[in-house]
Length: 564
Figure 1 (cartoon, helix red, strand yellow):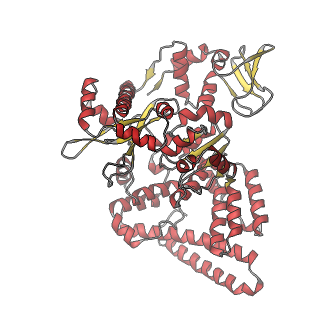
Figure 2 (cartoon, rainbow, N blue to C red):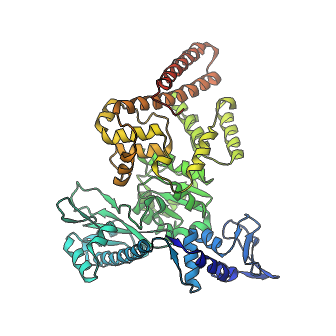
Figure 3 (cartoon, rainbow, N blue to C red):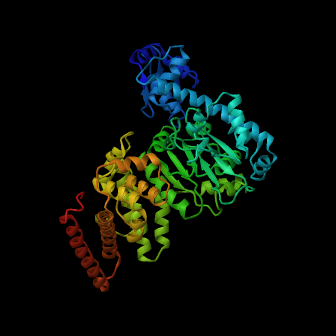
């Protein structure tokens, strides 16, 4: 469902650019126009001009320009539809819709329900000594509790059901927003019972979901953290925890500190680091990157100091670089940012000041390593990250730097620009799964869903295959039993074979592609770094490459693998 063209036309005619922008910026008269410091880049002399007569604005510093709608989209991170709605409300223009009106009514009702449930959780936090004590032990201040609307879900589901009855809330609606679930036998369960509640708001401030942290006294076998499932009002790939509270600070500083968890964010925020957002345990997505780019030029990744945290740094870097956001890595001596923040503002500042550009960090690591294979891994990762940068001039500078620092000739430091084209194409929103995957990738995913144990037993190189990022994300979700039911249904619906041996054949070919890249990089490294006396080592690598090419050709000629 969308807003009718007639409503959009009326909004565009009515919305005065001076009237709208003066709500957010201090505009000063400059001849027939008005000027201000640009909110979209840092400057000392005003270059942001508003022209009431033409009903447009333009910054002559950063080049951004547009009308009232475009300003709200850029300034508040709104979609076109959201900006139109906000302007319509400002000027009292009735909004007419086209399409499925019932769906919009349902969403409006769910937004109202989730707001009521939030108040229920807030009230129960006030009643629970145990929950308040826990938050106090974690160092969460009362002001922080209020700012982020923290609550508590009581252990007895009867409390929630009584509340729903009093407020005339249907159990069906509680299920739709992910607060309750139904067992196979029809019994009702409270998803968040006995948990501290973290309300999750979208970029415009609407409440869309909840997160929950189990109290220490609860069953130790239960997952420590739970989040709402995706619903009609919640798409986790588009929401960052704390973004709504942080966006003014993000715009001001042009920098985002990105952490993983709720307490990481709360602890940092309450000691003064308010330009901070959290990913909530999910990978940073293209939608997250697109949203952040409207507010920042630089991101500092401050993830947990464990293997999973370091892997998350790489995944997040790829997304941010694709949107031309500078990436800095802040290694932690502590377990996580929450622990660091409890040591005080000076310690946090010290760490942030010592954060390093991701490419400089990799180069420093390269120099510290002496093992050839370890160095190869770093070179491969450096080149892979460079391939995500759309600015070709910046790519050239980074390759020059890599060549000078490592002594490897630039002719051996190849960046796959074709991959970049695919990544940019994938930035487009929408599209079903089959539009983002190859035929063979769908075969593998379908076979893995239907024959998971067999494939995991027969093939053990899932971390060593050359595949697209989207396929890799789905693959890992299936392997770790974290894939959503609707995605499983879609993959199983495709008319492709799901024979496990065929899937293994394809996976083997993906592995050989990965191995070929590894060997080519090893060969380049040896050519530039080994002495003449090591010619024998180079010949062995060449022989491996030739044999590998024969194996790959065999796969393709066999007709099993048809996407080169």
